[in-house]
Length: 470
Image (cartoon, rainbow, N blue to C red; front, side, top):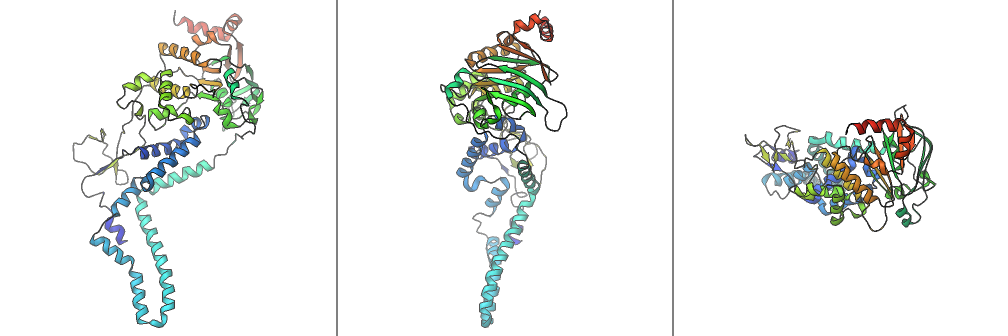
């Protein structure tokens, strides 16, 4: 108790202080932890086979940091007591040895009780040391106990998530050169409902996409376009029917192999609390540190130009994962560490209202997501045979959309591409297959010319959108 009381408050109430970190390993460790901890990133981590890479990078950062890998409260506690040769520290040592002193004097006074006293002394010394450590630990940790309990709760919640996607046993593909010719995809009477809902997201859907074909899935929001892509990437499994990849049931294929052969951009993409370079590099975890490849992916995604204009370029953070702390600051202080100061109190410590994160427009953020998707496709050795894009041009202006479609067509080569959109644009003219979805089912399918001749719902909506530009 004396040890804790003598040290508590010394770094909170005395003087003016502030704490930040510029240690790259610590910042990266904090970012990796948030990527895994935040459920909003789970879909992309799973579909992109990022989990193993993130875990390994986190371990490497922790190993390099050693004793400095703790959070702010742990580190400041060690600093507070480290190498303090003071009267208070000397008194703490004397008090810690008090049980030994008492029993030594008793042993001198009553020699006959020495055997029992030595045994008692050892037992009590061990228990008192353990008890003291527990008390000090409790007092030190109480300040952010709720935060730690919340972290433990999230950990157990992850353990309670049941894995409904059962891994297959068959390796895929048997020959990587097969990916050069694209991947065939077939749905046979597939139906699916999202967990916790009664409405079908897909109902009795059947179609086949040949290897190397460009397929455009069009339809209104909520018609089932995104669900088709999620089922192909095995984020979910259908409740009814079967999906075949190159003629083989998707459930029989090893999940990691399948996802390695697919590059996917979801409509509800996220960005990680890491640098822009790492945000793009995670598109291909095996080459996440290849700067040349990252820059090429940024060029293809249309992001290179605005990234180079940022003060920190590719090393800029979209969301800096580190929180800064400070005590009461002099009146009139507006910025600290180059960032705005918020005068609020949280558990006795104020914190930053803003970090040195980078603010980008919706279109720029989407280009970064596209760049991450391109990462796995720009390689001489075939890795990807299927490209999935879910509304990749939703936040782009018409010029940027046209440029994107041109890059997509050039990048595709012989790969199979499935592209979902609610807008009927120039890309549909070049599609080998168009699936028009309505009310969770495929209402019409065929080429652009064929669907226009049918004068069905696709043709009607095409004419409505075309008239807007007349």
